[in-house]
Length: 203
Image 1 (cartoon, rainbow, N blue to C red):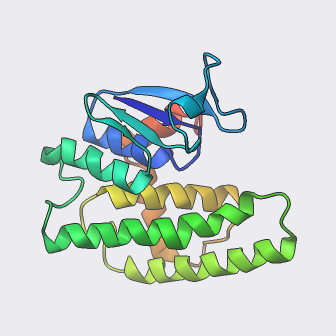
Image 2: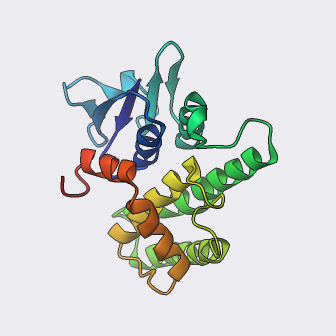
């Protein structure tokens, strides 16, 4: 398998999932501005969407949406229990979390990375995100991870969004459950491996 990624981008989520799954894969770095790979080849020839993540699964083609990629990764390593089994109520709950993170967090972060938008516009989206983080803080009361006591792939996605929040200067210190959760996920050895591989923490 090949994971096409950009350091610190949303591709960090499937990178963590692959590490936690213990599956063999190659990392392929993408220059998102130039749409080029490290060897100078055209990334758009690989993924016409021009975005990361993209996962080239041996004999199964290319997957290009993060919430789907992490489910595919988890299903390929079912023994690691990174997502509940297909067709169970718990699987739908995990998909609910993945969709919430994708639509309510990920897409609300996008405007903050646009230099052409005004500070007032960005403040609107920051306030919206703080409301979502407050909801998550309450949802995490009494549990270690989103699905309970076990790490699953929605946690890889949420951790990536919390990593973005730190980069963007969000003050989440009053959200004690959420900050404890972020520290708990960050301490996982496989998460640290992914962060180090992307140059996001000291080796």
